[in-house]
Image 1 (cartoon, rainbow, N blue to C red):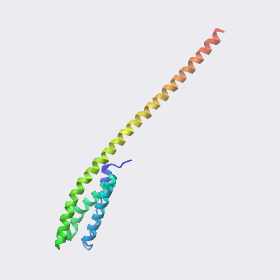
Image 2: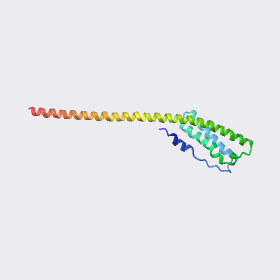
Image 3: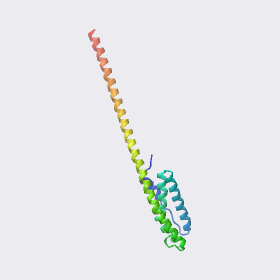
Length: 154
C-alpha cells in the first residue's frame, strides 16, 4: 500500500540541527547524498523514496542551511559558488519531487479504484449468497408444504 503524499512530506521535512562549529562541507556532503539517493530512486521507479530524499535535500538546502554562518555569509569564493550550485540543484529537485508526487497520487488513485471494485465484488458475492440462502429456504418450505399436502391427501 502506497503512503500518502502528506505522510511522506511529514517524514521528509524533518529539521536537521545545524551547528556553526560543524564545517559547512559536512552538511553539503549530507545534502549531496540525499540528492543522489533521490535521483537514484527516481530512476529505479521508487517514487516514494525519491520524493522523501529529494524533499530532504531541498529542505536542508533551502531551510536548514540558512542557520549556518558560512552559508549565510560565505567567506570563500568556492562557498559562494557551492551555495549557488546547491540552490540551483534544489530548484531542479523540486521539479523532480513534483513529478514523484504526481506518480504517487496516480498509484493512490489506482489503489482506491481497485479497493472500490473489490468492495463491490464482495458486496455482490454477499448478495448472491443471501439470495442463494433465500432460494434454498424457499425450496425447503415448498418441499415441506408438498409433503404436508401429500400427507393430507392420503
